Image (cartoon, rainbow, N blue to C red; front, side, top):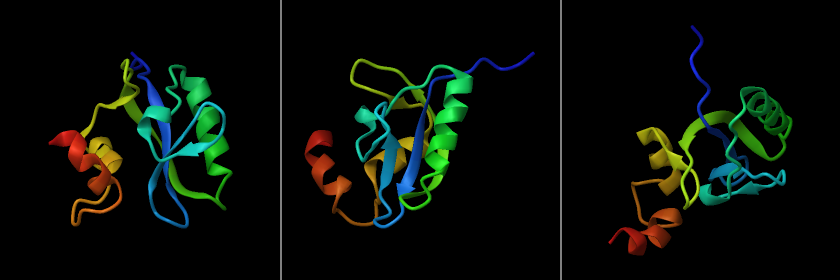
Amino acid sequence: MPREFTPKVVTASDLLEGDVIYLTANDDWSRDLVDAEIITDEAHAQLRLLDAERQANRIVGAYLAEMQPAASGPQPTHFREEFRRTGPSNYAHGKQETQAGLRG
């Protein structure tokens, strides 16, 4: 029996800066997960992933990440995606610095 499709977002790394980025519904990339397009159809998810992979001049390592839809935007269902969303943990700058006030 096939497994039920779960909501996903397309994520990758910015080729030049290395930041985690998310594909939005209007074919742009955002560094904020809240802006990501939540995809609930498997065929549409595969098409969006192919669209992303064609942007090799902008991104690297595109894949579909499982998410839980929420009123505040997509929420990761796996610790890896939560970790990627917050950025590097070995020093406080970038996302770690700007989100420190949100966690405290």
